[in-house]
Amino acid sequence: MEVASNPKSLPNPKSQIPNPTARRHGWEGWDEYAPFYDWENARTLGRRDVAFWTRLATEARGRVLELGCGTGRVSSPLARAGVPLVGIDRSAPMLSRLRSRAMRGRSIGGRRGPLLVRGDIRTLPFAPGEFAIVLAPYGVLQSVLDDRDLTATLDGVARVLVPGGTFGIDLVPDVPQWREYRNRLRFRGRTGGASVRLVESVRQDRRRRLTTFEQLYVERRGTRVTEHRFDLTFRTIPIRQMADRVEQAGFEVDAVLGDYRGGPWDERSDVWIILARRT
Image (cartoon, rainbow, N blue to C red; front, side):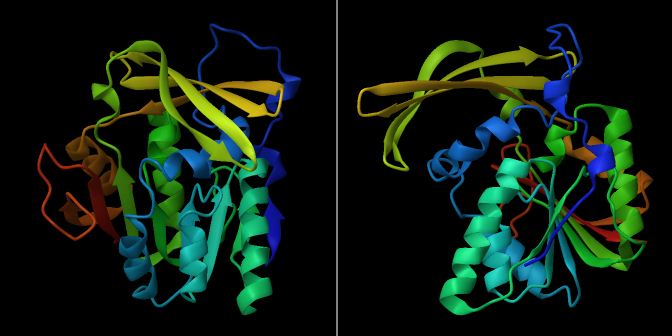
């Protein structure tokens, strides 16, 4: 497994003075989320989308790029399936967990892990036409919070795909439907030898279609209690509008799906999937 970085696009947020009125960025909070991401997602999404992405990736017949690869929930199964995978993520702690997971897999099966790149999906550090398929699983594009950044991301994907290459997008449709609440106990359990509780609050900015989850993880190890606080913000764009944006970036939308079995989309679908082809 190789590791690369794109440091010019990654300012250190700790070097900036916090400003509660400043514009939110979608990458904020993910470093702090890294120790708990797998634990929480095992209780929500789990692995139900992995077979879908594996099928797309293995049919691509070329290099595969995953946007926002995180801790490897999707990347690791794809790599085990023999997919020539590159994963990009801004969060060093997330990539560190994926790197450890990949090394454990190599120690068991001797397989080569994915190439991991620390970088910003708005400024993809890859050559034109480098990939046969680009994957954006589990709402990763919803962490791109404004139109200018979304345009840069979609244009970058179009640039790094070969003509005729596939762009797969998975959106989470119910985010703007979450009712606002304060300090609700969402999950409790154990991870890494500690007992953990997630206490969550939700804020909605309906004008900007932004949903912010205020996360408080309370971690207990024996008599020691540690609190971890951070926010995660997501943007929701109607699927027809997202499809239009994708087409404006140089794609032709081939399919809009409503589940991971290839079923048709409608407003009640649990997931919104767009499959587009680079023209």
